[in-house]
Structure formats: C-alpha cells, structure tokens
Length: 159
Length: 283
Image 1 (tube, rainbow over the protein chains, first blue to last red):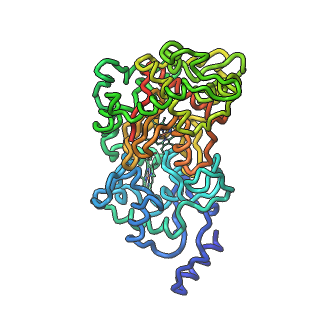
Image 2 (cartoon, chains in turn orange, blue):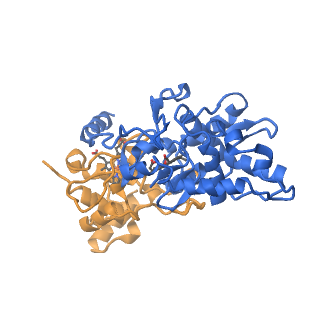
Image 3 (cartoon, rainbow over the protein chains, first blue to last red):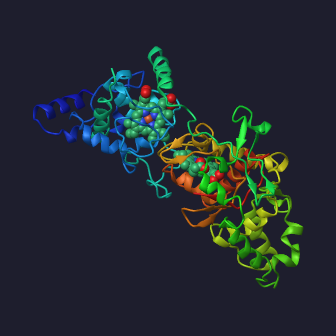
C-alpha cells in the first residue's frame, strides 16, 4: 500500500495525472464499512465527466437504477436504487468511493453492481455479447471514471 | 456495524415511492369472452418469495395491453395461422403431419400448454413444448428438428398454447420432475455475469419498479410465446431468458440446454394458478 501512496504523492508533486499509479482493482483498500479513503488515481475527479459516465448506458448506466433531480435531461431514471439527491450529505467522499467501487462491501447482498472489480464472477461474459470471457475482466469503470463519478456525487448536497 | 445499519435506514427513507409503477388493476378478457386470471395467490412452493403472482400483462402500457385483447389486433395470431398450415403438412421420411397422429389441435392439444414443461417417462427427461415438438419430428416423422430459436417452433408453440388459453397453469414440480425443478430454482437465484444479477434480483425483489425505461414484471411465462413489438416477431420463453442473462454481462446458456429446460420448468411453476395467455403481446 505505501508504495502506491508514494507513487501517488510523487505524481501529484510532479503535477502529472499519475496514471501509472492507479490502484488496481484487487488492491483497493476497503475499511470495515466498505469505505475507500484513498483516491484510486491520485488525480481529482472531473464532475462533467462524472455526469456523462453516470448517465450513459455504455458507461456507468447509474440512471438505470437511480434518479437525480438536478439532471432533468436524463429521461426515464430507474427506481431500483434510492434517489441520489443529497447523497453527499449522507456519505463522505471515502464512503461514496467505496460504494461506487464495490457497493457489496457497504451493503451486503445489494443488487448494485460492483464497478471496480475484475474477478469472482459466475459465467462472466464479454460485455453484452452473451459470449464467455476469461477473468480477469476489465472493470466496468476505470479508476479515473470512478473518481469522476465520485466527484459528481460529491456535488449532490441539499443541506 | 453502527454506521452500516444507520445508513441503510437513511437509504430506505430516501428511496422514492417504492413500487411507484406497480401492477395496474385492469382486467384481461380476450375477444370479449375468454376471461383471464392475471393475479392470484402464489403457489405454496413460493412461500417466503411471493404472496401474489401477477401476469406480465399488468406491467405493460395500455396500448400494448389492448393489442392482446382481440385476436385481430394480436400479431401473434398470424403465427398461429401459419402453424395451422404446418400442422397439416406432411414432412420427413415417414410422410406424416402432426394431424396424422394428433387430429385437430382443438381435439388433442387442449390443456397441454398448461402442464408443460413436463416429465416424459419414456425419455426419462423433462420436456418443454419445443423439445417435444422436435421429438415428434425426429422420432415419428423422420424430419429434421426445428431450430429452437426459429419462428416456426415459436409459431407451433403458439398454436398449441391457444388451445389452453384461460386454463390455469398447473405445472408438476414433484415426482420425477423434482430434481430438474430444484436445478431450475438454483439457477433462478444465481447471480450471473459481471453485473452479478439473478432472475430474482430483478423479477422477485424489484417487480413494479422501473429499471431505466423498463417496467419490471415478475418475469412470468404464462403468456409465452410472446409477440415482441420491438423484434416484430414471436419469441419463446427461453429466447427471453437468453436476453435477460446476456443483459447481466454473462455467458448465456443455449436454447434447449439442460439449464434452460430446468429454468423453464421452474419459472413456469412460479406461474401456477395464472391463466395460459400465449400468444401475448409485449413491447
């Protein structure tokens, strides 16, 4: 773990995007409640990118299950998960990062998919082709995409 | 633990009106005469899972619902006409048609759809209508089996289903079928694919909710085969299963595989008590 930290700090100091220092999916440090304190990339998330990832079917597709009032342009938000209005009042950044990376660490048995996980699946497929795929699979979202979505979620405050 | 429990409660309170969509209260009568049971108490084997079983018809928009209420508006009925011709057409080395062994569909097929999939003693396996049709073709007609995802087989299943419309689904889950049924149940609750979703995650835990633009039903198959407006064609239950499994980013099973036969038996049994509706209309 410390090696990653040093790499990330070095990346920040150098002002770079620190791509090389991305925490790999199997190395993400979840605490006992499912929170992830450390940024997965060391770089700040981009809110606009986060909105895109959140809303598009081919990326996070979070809208399939969640509703956010500040995104009225998103047609047909789903109802499978709770509304995310004010979600940043309920959770801090580390907790939100943990939920997006692997929600099952926060909520046992939740239907919410794990977005930063590469193995341990039953009959893993190659995206939506229905064909078999070998693990490790690419995670559904990249480290930076997780950070972008978290940055967007952090803007969802009501208080 | 404290944090986990607390936040779970907050999440619950923050949830939008659960079951906002729900099932509607419309009544399904076909051609103004065949009354359908579209909601009824769940069979005892669903204890703890569902109290009430509900036809997928209740989760569709009014304009789609109406198309199923009159055979002239139901595009699935065209397939029934097509299959009636096939029923009377001799094929294969034996020079026989379905009619040569079974007479008219009205005479011989009434009640069949209601009890399928069903254990076949001679073959020592559970058969779906599709695999039974193919067994007749290969064993009695000397004809090639039909592809299980073909329009021909869906149409023949529709012709057979129509003879039982309005009769209650009554699939046997005990005796020699029990082992296959258990296997189907296990598949129903397995969280497949990279999205790690089981049939139950969507159709038991979340029916009535929207998942994006789709209004989740209980995933019942009493109304199959179904004419899907989106595909402009009739699809069988296993066709639908394949699409749902694919949507979990999983490797699907083949139509006619032991897994899908077991799953079809299990899912059919979840609809025990609902009326046979096929061919239905879906978006």
